[in-house]
Image (cartoon, rainbow over all chains, first blue to last red; front, side, top):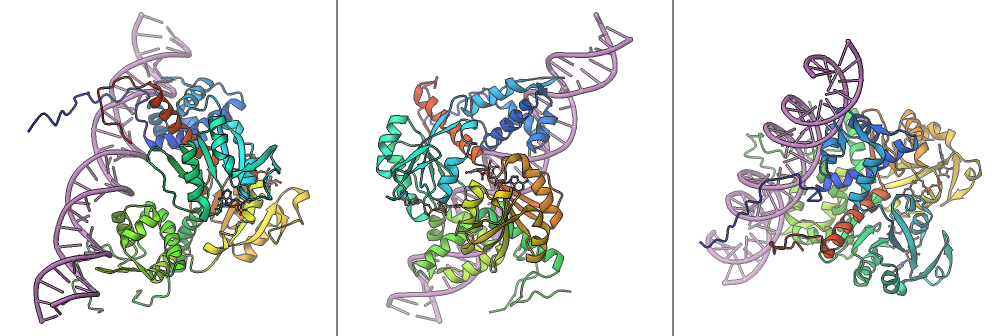
Length: 241
Length: 241
DNA sequence: CGGAGTTTGTGACCGCGAGAACAAACTCGC
DNA sequence: GCGAGTTTGTTCTCGCGGTCACAAACTCCG
Ligand SMILES: NC(=O)c1ccc[n+]([C@@H]2O[C@H](COP(=O)([O-])OP(=O)(O)OC[C@H]3O[C@@H](n4cnc5c(N)ncnc54)[C@H](O)[C@@H]3O)[C@@H](O)[C@H]2O)c1
Ligand SMILES: NC(=O)c1ccc[n+]([C@@H]2O[C@H](COP(=O)([O-])OP(=O)(O)OC[C@H]3O[C@@H](n4cnc5c(N)ncnc54)[C@H](O)[C@@H]3O)[C@@H](O)[C@H]2O)c1
């Protein structure tokens, strides 16, 4: 029984800014930022939590709690200053300056992503497009030359890239991810329907179209069943009164 | 078998199929289905929860719990039959037959989606492409003629469409959603960065690229700060890997 | 200057979901 | 037939996250 259980008093102080923002809150901050941008474009200088919450599609209490994690940037009885809050959220997320991004796999989806203007307007800058296929290389997409996949490490080092987008077929996704990690990339956005294995310290987020549709299909099935009465062909029992 | 002996309780048995599957589980079922498909393609006939869990990138206990919501389809001491379990999951999700889907907004992203083969192989069939712009209409994308947006209601009724995909600019998204709902669509997959307002009974899922990237940027910022020396106290040794 | 009205920030509560642990059920070898 | 080994299905516990409700803080007006 040594003093192993130090227990670290450390107090329960929760209000130390920049300390452990809940993941669910992090996922909503970009939504708030977008809503604020939209308000700013309409020359609205300040807003209440209620207004911002409806613009963002969330509960106002949740919004206030989320914002409280980054500090007290509102004024009681008044609301939030749009520009000021925008900046604070952008600073917390880390998009006050642009992040360089590379896209690997310039097929159907990769080209759409490359042409997507929403990147640059929200804190990101596509600095390179990479593809393994010979016919693609050298072609220009969205003003950028498509470069060979072999140049990955060189580009990542030269441009200080830490975020990579994968839009290659599922079979190649793990290889690309491995190469990205080896090159020094530590955040990956994966569009391929594959489970990626990465070392600790590397973040992966996935966007999976089929999964989203299947989730919708599940609820749609239940709606149909609800309206219909029965669910399926009951080979077992399914006796209904 | 069929000896349903101790069926008296029914209290916490909770094994009534088709009753309240948790949302988090629903979101993972497609992942399991994909992993199973992959196993089947490699001619693997059965697997344990451990194997399937690693293939799906989740914890085995979580996987077993998830599967238990749809019934007892495994065999203790043996594992799961791949084909049988695949069918059961597909049936639960509702993708034993194909769902007709329409895509509205055939720009960069819409064309990529239309050309995406993953739809048809996972329970969905693109039956129509719609766009409001004159120059697009009549053109053929992925073997389908692009039709005027005004035909929406007619197409939805004729093809019994209940799932719609929105890939128009954010400013038009709400209008398109309203038209979809009016036409009878009750599930929407939205790619536009906009908050959609829909009546109850209509499901909306959103895929938002910028948000995903900003979440990555947030964690990336913290990694940079961590490595930079913004860490003040060195008293604690337990650095989370 | 003070009270009424408004809005933020936060403490309390509760339900869902993740994970560990274990009993039940099945197979296999003898 | 029976015990040993294996794997599922379920129970229990704990922490995160969503919601409510309210005190604190600010403005406005008389
Ligand atoms: N098209 C869509 O709408 C869509 C939607 C959701 C998901 N996805 C997924 O995104 C991925 C790409 O889809 P797509 O339709 O653009 O496919 P695609 O076949 O059109 O393009 C894939 C590109 O990746 C390149 N590539 C292949 N292997 C590579 C490697 N090892 N290194 C570098 N580049 C490589 C190919 O040359 C090709 O240009 C797929 O995994 C697909 O499942 C696509
Ligand atoms: N391109 C991408 O990679 C990408 C990624 C993420 C999100 N998005 C989002 O997806 C949406 C589409 O992106 P895009 O790059 O394809 O844009 P785009 O401008 O290339 O295409 C939009 C299409 O929608 C059509 N359209 C406009 N208003 C319409 C209406 N009221 N009814 C029917 N059709 C209409 C236009 O004619 C055009 O063909 C945007 O909201 C964008 O923010 C795109």
